Image (cartoon, rainbow, N blue to C red; front, side, top):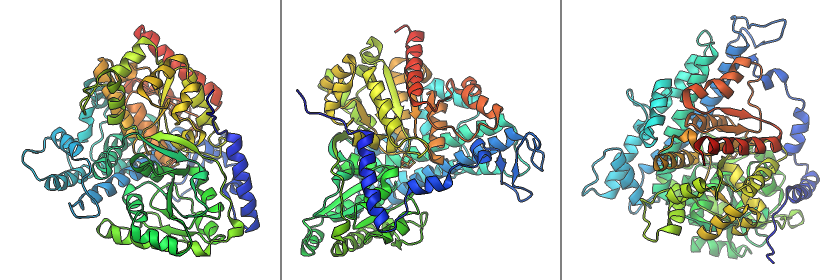
Length: 630
Ligand code: MSK
């Protein structure tokens, strides 16, 4: 009898309660307290019917005041707010991608950043029509970095990556006028359209929302993922561990948090430097332990097996252990609360990007040109801080689970194709996966993504849905904080196959995979649309016909909505467990949940009852199967 056991949400909560007791002793604030202070939330904001885009207002829509001062109605106000929300997310992901491209301009054989996956570089160069024959790989890398950066501002044409989609999908995009042009242009157009006195027609605003989202997923995020892979290695399955128990009482703990692997990769490198390890020993530590939070964690877990301490709503918990020497952040999803919180402990809160500057932090500007030097400095600061630990405040919850992560598209194809074809190389196909789906051994797939949100009991929706789906023979692919929820629960342990229906369990056994596959960080949702495209091409079906849906049950950020838009625009129905702030306009709700289906053959489904959300996804997958006669 196996001893495998999942960690429960109740166990997560118990661990958090114990940490909050430490917090109370030192006068620390917490998100749990701030949620109470902020509840109830503003109803106008929740419905999206507050307009603050000019200084005649703010205007709020009520039955007595159905129009703002300029005459805009609820549909225009909600649509404009929604588009700005999407533009914020698209800008953020895409700027992450741009930073990666800039870092890529620095690759050198003897530099801090190198080309680790030359095959992928050659593949993309050929895809873009760039001459590769006889070229020095670094010379080619620099040309590709320039070309990738040009995608952000090119005056003509649409995104190069679109040609990866099936022709049918590309035609839909063309006909719907949502092919993204230059990445920055789609964000600028969104801001222009929503300026006072421009668009107030819901249809036009939603169309541009899709286009802006597309500039993220089929533009900036895809660049971020692909060039990260070339520089840091395309992920392959690797074993790691997850949850706060990965922090070590007798070692220097450095937590990397944020999104951009350019920093965290260097921190990991220098934490392994013998000189730094010797320094750690000289201050009484047994070594240096790097662990991650949020998507930076996903990046280094997938490529190095670096343990995952937690996801978005656990970022304060790592400091509350009293055993965190430094929390080193780059960009996005970083609570400003970490500044004051770290002051209650010995923890150094180190910000490194001009994009994310915060009070009560130590700012060490991290740039590609001096990456090694800065990483060494940061690691040294953390090590030297070990002696300042207050032993009486140290408590590391003994909760952790094994996880196998690193399922890039290439790794999925190789793993599954490898079951039936021992000769598989980089050009393998998704056919074995399609065979499993067609025969009904696997009923379909769900791409589950997104954050935590205090509006949902943290991680309960992610974990509950995953358990339900795999029990129904639906394979789940994951990214972002959803992936970490799975890992912390134990669902990425290969033993979790025990929780699957008979069909999926058999596939997990044959392919030696866990039933939920970690595909990466939030920019890596671009991997998911590439996989869907490949499945469509290999099957001869349209993406929208595949028994595949997307789901973001606990989402919270602008990026998540931008992602939702490009996933839907790719032809994948997307299920949300948190309502977007659009319910003040029946027209906008209609466009998102029905109207856009005419353009892209998919739409949003919104359901805050998580059990029903699961039922609806399963029903949708079965509906698609029936339509195909499988
Ligand atoms: S980190 S955007 S909380 S997934 Fe990518 Fe997690 Fe959501 Fe941030």
